[in-house]
Length: 397
Image: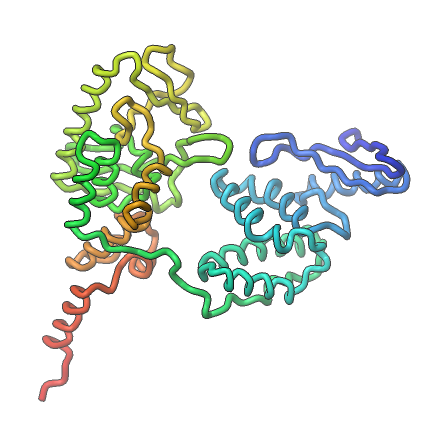
């Protein structure tokens, strides 16, 4: 089997074979050493390569660390089925929350007690119930694979672990942004500043920040008065900014917009045209490469390969409005990325909008998600609930 090579390292031998590419596009090589003879290394390599070809991840060792196993599982099993951004989220969870505590434990020696202690340490560190659940699910899925088809362990120790009920449910504080507070924000960032239009879109539509920043003029139908959402902008670690698909399938949606927002968008579109003339050759154009990577090029320079994209949310000189900059502005105001979605949903529910319709605007597949996450038990809702009870449900004397 020519695909399997051997080499001597000190007094022992190793096998080596290529196993496709990792999540970042680099060539992936499987290597294992510690064999007494070249023949033993080759036989083990053939077995591992055969295992890899049949859908496994090239690991047959009876003694492998959790870190090595989960790294191989993520790159060779998970990465081929999910988006690059999802892989990066998993990598962050592994390196920040799992590997520092459990990474050096041998896979075959990992016990429910070890995992239970790890879970409780996460709770004591102040992580939310949802965050702990996501970490638990990640490690449980990996260990399910270790049971079958990898057949490295006989049972999954994570299957027996429960998330502590007293782990906090809501770490992120969700604020209702009053009309007065929003107007104060617009006074601070008025028309013509890079953040005026993004703030308007967030407040009037409940869109996610990545969706707002990925919005192009092609996505706005001024006649039908709606926005067609089809992409977002994400930053991929060490790779730059990319146009990517939306968070979920239900995120692909259209949003009807009010006349005020429509008028401000038209005004900004005209202002963009004036800015382009004013900056001349220094004006920056945005291009989408075939893989979604965003290329920025001054107007005076030759256009790079790729599709030119006319974004709605850009600076006066055409440069991108960056998500981290917008997020920092919100943070400085005591707000976060969820504040506008929370406000938008709650205000609509308060004023009689059907939860299913609100869910459609936010891109939720289920109205229950909208009600649980983004609607707030406000004084107005309490008063309206009491009025309904008083009018229709209370016992008559």
